[in-house]
Length: 333
Image 1 (cartoon, helix red, strand yellow):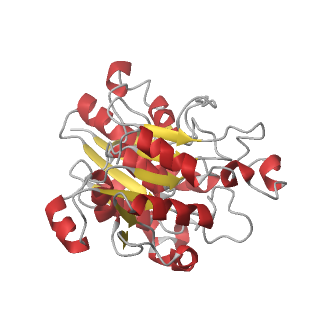
Image 2: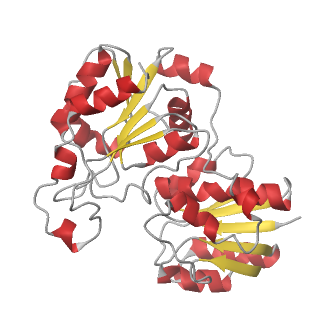
């Protein structure tokens, strides 16, 4: 029986990308393979009831030295008592080196261990699997995609007053509370226009986290036939709500990655990001519609071009009518 530890301490979307290796590991090493994860506390709840995952170690303060970190000591001590056969590291930060060095594992692969070239034509979900090429046959890796656990829909439908047919909109993203320009954001007026148009055809469900209320107040009041679930559901419920929706409309955010992972059609608005590396993972069983103007200055994410940008026209110039027509063309409503 194999024991495997995976380290991925990024945001929720990053963890969804990392889930692309789970089925490959189970398929190759056997269904009884024990898989543990090291994650940030909030994102780690993604695996709360996922039967494929044995346990999740929370790591909140990633930069804290081992001597001062109870969380890091717990991970190291656990590995000493029950050693791992394989450690897979998806974190490039130097703050993880001491922890990874101390963990008791027979073999260690991944970032900081393998010199893997990830180019601009490789989606980040696919990039995670590149580290396993020396361990697992390519045909197995080819059939392993991001996937997340969901729960019974009937109870959630009643709990949140969901209609039989609805569409999920996620106007926020992880940069919504930062100062300055949110380059990945779509204008508030555009979100309001799209909500108004869609709500005449189908129930619109708005999702977001509780700490984003200030942002959502800017696009309220919502139109009739709109269900406000901002801050009202946990991650497992969110995954289920997305799974049973007709589609998801979002900017670059975890909601889009979850949508792709549960095979719900995704319409993702992207401007500064690379539409290949950063888009939700496209698999044979899902549909990811990337809406991008593909301007000459795009992609510019984390470059000097973005730092010098004073007006993110790559997002602003995407009209609500254009997004609506894309949804109609796909026969979502």
